[in-house]
Length: 381
Ligand SMILES: Cc1cc2nc3c(=O)[nH]c(=O)nc-3n(C[C@H](O)[C@H](O)[C@H](O)COP(=O)(O)O)c2cc1C
Image (cartoon, rainbow, N blue to C red; front, top):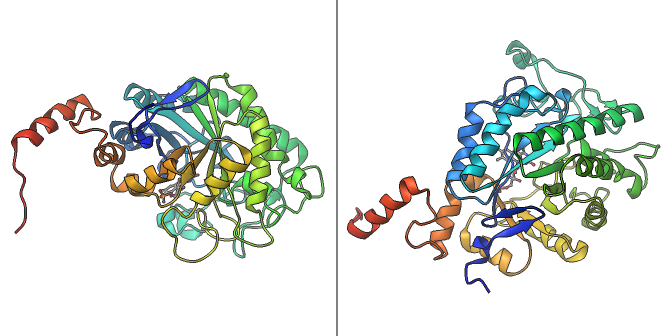
């Protein structure tokens, strides 16, 4: 048996082996041009590979042009977009990380403001910057909230087209070199808005009962799985709860996870919120460390599936304890990785796994080990 901390034991999913359990959670950069990734994205994600993460997931990437969250969000709706992703996937893989990507459609929340311009519906200031609106789509013709644009309810032929776009984007992701694909089923975007009774008022096969509301998520999972080779891992990010007594519940997530598993999904990434309250927070209150871990724990136990825990996991000991307790298989880090892109390497040192900078890139590890052995460091009085 390995004596390494659990956080630094390898993790296998289908044909991929992650060298450790640290995952960089998808993080939008709102900095793409016409859906194309830039040098920014390569450097941003590349530093996490240099920082020792086991899996790196590229931000929410739209399968259709109108499925972008903002004008600055990337896409894979066109072959010309593959090259930008390929640079990132190749860099991550060459530097020891599994390269993953999140595929999504923003649905009712598509075409909104970049966060630093307000995070709301586009307004005259955005139009002046050239960010013009487009009509968002959803399960039903119900806007996100008052003041948000009208929503077009997807027709059945439009759902067929959407599925084709998921398949095409998944094939492009594989062509780019990604080894893990995550379907974005959370945070109030299109898939989640079909799942939740708070936003889905359809009366056809895609609305009403739980079975019907899950249909789009399951159709997408089956479609993506059929489009990619067996060895590519498939994850699904869920908003495990809406945080509203009339909304989507954790018990629904367990049922969904069981059915996703039957469709060839390998991992459930457990987030929350996005319809009844802000994304990654099921309504109200100050978020506590590891606030979403119980969702990963329940899904793992009840659906008998690997899960990824995410949300205010910031300390190596905290991450290790979650894994040791069997509450999740992988630990996703987002904002703490922005604070410290080398979080995984520091965690390895903190947990006593790497005592000589041997996990560090050779370009710096050798020097840092020598410095540690022969230097005194400034200590304030
Ligand atoms: C800058 C930024 C962009 C994000 N973009 C995405 C995204 O593209 N897809 C997604 O599912 N979640 C996104 N999230 C949510 C994170 O993946 C993560 O679930 C959340 O921040 C909670 O984890 P943390 O406490 O470690 O930051 C984003 C978060 C941040 C901070």
